[in-house]
Image (tube, rainbow, N blue to C red):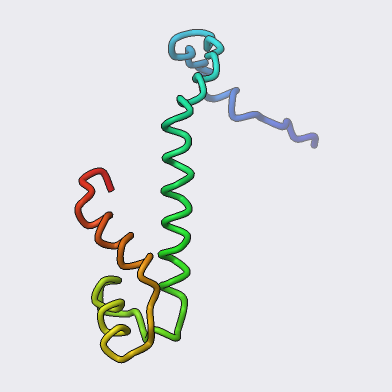
Length: 99
């Protein structure tokens, strides 16, 4: 009264799939970006950080449903003294096609 343990491979043929393209080649790391490009990236990150801080500053009113420039104008209209630097950044990025 012994039971024989059967495996699924007893009923079905084992098929091994071939790898696509064989072994993978090791790729070299990409060269670092040129310094001028890296510097502009850090400048853009700093500008974005300033804009995010403006977004999170409740002294200039709520920021939902309006653009940053509209929020800046509204704060100026109500005498809340928003930073001129933020307005300059907004006008600069508004005309910059790359951003």
